[in-house]
Amino acid sequence: MTGLDDFNPSEHKMLPERSFDDFEIGEKFFAPSRTMTEGIFTNFQAASSDNHPIHYDRNYLAELGHPDLMAHGFMTLIQAAIGATPLAHSLGKNLIGFVDQSSKFLKPVYCGDTVYPIFEISELSPNKSTGIMGLSIKIYNQNKGLVLQGMQRYLIKM
Image 1 (cartoon, helix red, strand yellow):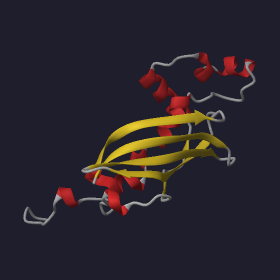
Image 2 (cartoon, rainbow, N blue to C red; image 1 turned 180 degrees about the vertical axis):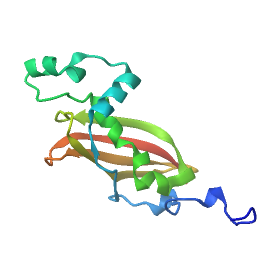
Image 3 (tube, helix red, strand yellow; image 1 turned 90 degrees about the horizontal axis):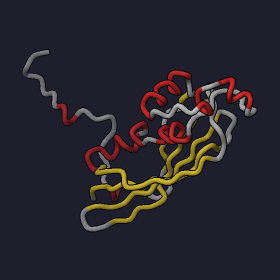
């Protein structure tokens, strides 16, 4: 390689960029599965300062009838970050920001569980120069149990 190569960092993309109008209701995007390891529990505790024993003390949890460390709800929710999906890379610079989210925690997630996040476009509301993209979120565990269900909305450049 020489300094004369035609490399352009702004053209280094995982996927072609798509505009708001290129998306359709019902499209699905998948984040990689992730096993909830002790390392993830430790890092979440450090980042959140949440040190309640229901998440980090196996003896305490056993007394309550839980089989292992139980993930904090937000620890499960962060597995639904669109940056881990092809969607964020398809949006590229058209993604302006995260507007809102809601979620329901349906089943506990334990240390050693593997989670599978799925995103489905459920709203496309265009405005003049931007639009709102709503995503229905579902996270399943390795036993096909639905552990989280929710909604996220993003502001997208038209």
